[in-house]
Length: 212
Image (cartoon, rainbow, N blue to C red; front, side, top):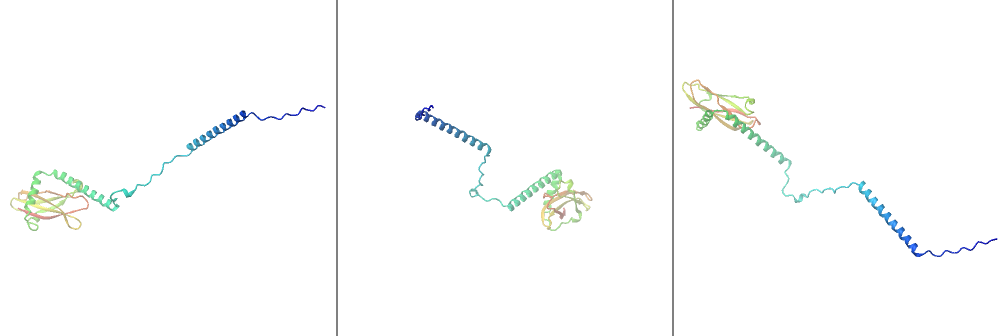
C-alpha cells in the first residue's frame, strides 16, 4: 500500500503582488463611485426644473408722495372730460359762427354796445321773438334764431340780449345779436349761439330788446 507524500505548507505570498491587487481594487472602486455620482447629478439636473426666486414686493417706505385715491381719480377724470367737452363746444361754436357774415358780427357787437345803458327789458320786446334750431343742423350746439321785425313806420336798428339758463334758472351765458337800419316791415334773423356743452341742457331766454 502506497502512502501519498505529505503536503507541503504554502508559504506566504510575495508582498508585492498583494499590494498591487489592493491598489487596483481601490482604484476601480473610486472610478465606479465617481461615475455613479456624475450619473446621479446629471439625472437630477435633467429631471428637476429650476425655479427663479420669487421677487419680493417693492419697499413702499422708499416711495415719496401719496398715491391718489379712487375718489380723486374719478374727480380728475370728470374735470378732464368736462374741460374737453367745453373746448369741443367752443371750437364748434367758433366754426359755426365763422359761417355768419362779418356784417352780422359787426351788428352783434353794436347791439351789445347799445344795450350797455338800457334799464329793464327795453322798448322793443314786442318786435323780437326766438325760435330754436334743431341740433342736428348745428353740430349739437344750442342755437337760437332771433326774429327781429321793424313794426314802426321808420327805419330803425335793433339790439337783443339772449341769456342761456341752467336747470336752476341761473344765467350761465349771455349772447348779443342785432340788426341795423331795418326798413319799416323789414325782418332780420340773426343767430345766438351758445358755446356751452350740450350737457347739461340749457334753455334760452330773451332778456332785452331795444330799438334805437
